[in-house]
Image (tube, rainbow, N blue to C red; front, side, top):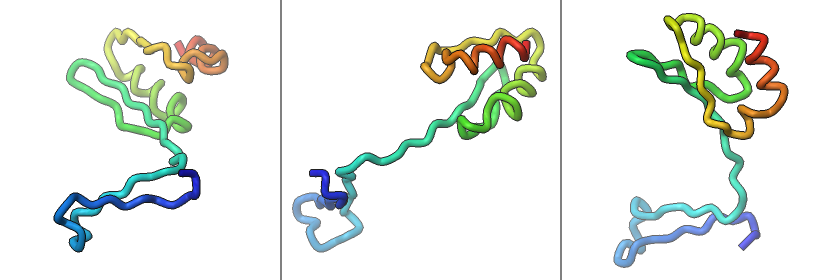
Length: 90
């Protein structure tokens, strides 16, 4: 169903009570990418992916003692521009 409408479903016996209705999207819903980091006893704030490297990641890593930076090989981590930036920031 690609008509742009959201379908509403209700559990059996709850037909008139909209409190029990839930929405199911039938079209593409744009996602949001976020980033966060964890370390022993600390964690970074959660930020939108577009605002990560310069204002959040570098200060966070620089505030740690002897950090080991690991990536999980996600495509956004392995693109050339990200790799070059991280190599320069070390």
